[in-house]
Length: 285
Image (cartoon, rainbow, N blue to C red; front, side, top):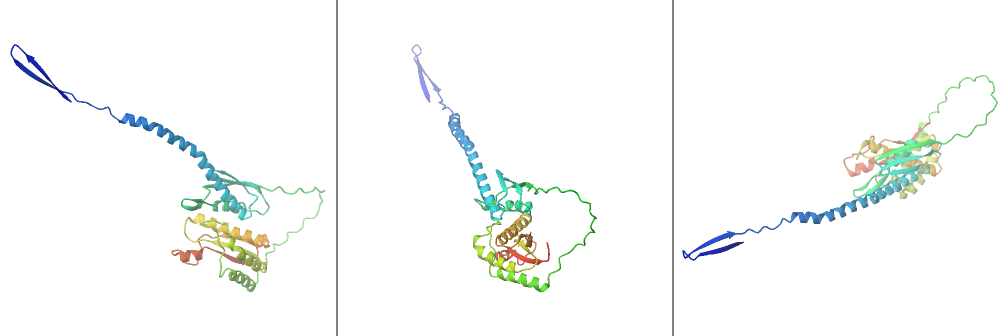
């Protein structure tokens, strides 16, 4: 903005014109903008703080629910769970004959829903088990007896090859046209496989010796995780057959992961064939 000042001199009859320029400067707006954003920033921080406990509780509840369902499906109802974030601790009094490794493998194989599909629930799984107390034995007066001679070790007689082949063929025929289905990346048996398991139990009841249930996976994913998953699935089948009347001392579970493929892992059809359960017959444990 500019102004003009006119000065007059009567003696010399002259006029002098003086121009002065004024520059108007507006105050900066940034301090006001930042001051206006501070309340919004405070509200955002408050919302993040408020959501953290809720999100943590939701994750823990999902991990607990899915892991509990996995253990119950495999017959490990005696195991107790404690969850902190995605860290799972399995504890409890271990029944006679129960395998701690099988319980931990089942807990590690549990999967939870996420935005990227079903993923492994637990980041870390640890065990804290105690053995069931032995039954008290009544004390008797000591007796002095002659030390018996050690008995020679009796090894189980080998089964006739024809009996082994007949048993394995009967089990293979059952799964020739159908296969035991599991939940994706899980050892939980799909309920629609119940009829197939009934047929397998009837075939296994006529078999001699010990039946080894073998779990196999495709080559997708981490080899260590695949091996744990295959063993957990074999344990699930053992538990299902035991519930159908097959004695547990006649069943043995073993997982091989992707070590023994029967088809090409580069195709979807080949990978589907490699994800399987097989049965082998042996003379003893």
